[in-house]
Length: 114
Length: 117
Image (tube, rainbow over all chains, first blue to last red; front, side, top):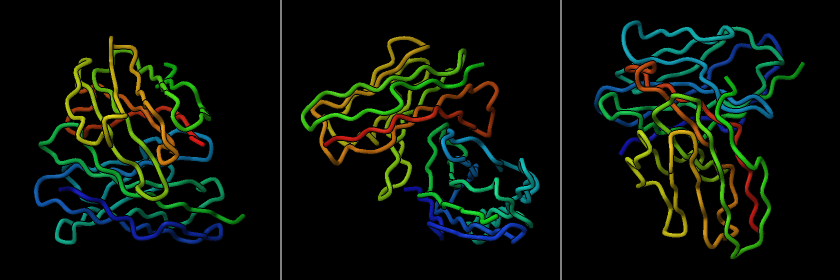
């Protein structure tokens, strides 16, 4: 069965610090990978996605993620965080041939100190 | 577009009562998903529909949970009887296969926070 592991449940950073949130998945076949973000009081929204091509994916608000197939990883990065990045971040995986069934990680709560 | 709409946003009920959560997907979307979010288990897929037909309900925790989609613009998730361990945030999401293509992107509603005392 597919599973998604996010390494940190809570992360606290100061503004301008660099961010890397870890995500590993277990599935041997073709995958689609996602990072969703949930800002306080708002619904989950897509941050970025990978389904083919360049393994370095750029999303909204300066976020990027790198798919490393050999490591089953899809880590999220941002070189310099802002207070407005305070949110919960979810990594998700979808078996590429399995339709819309998507498995989510437990989430990482990021708090950025101003 | 108003996005995915869920109601109520908050629900507090006593153990043993019936709870009905509602979802209106984005107009024209052909997939609808119900998720449950808890601190312990994260975000779990409960069930999803395609063109109003349930495709996979393997995530529904037990017979107390049921979901219906009588038409393309409305779905319900019912818990009867409710128990304290059902307390969670329940999300509805929708997607349009034609636009999502191979990426299977989903659009989420604001969630319903359920508390069962």
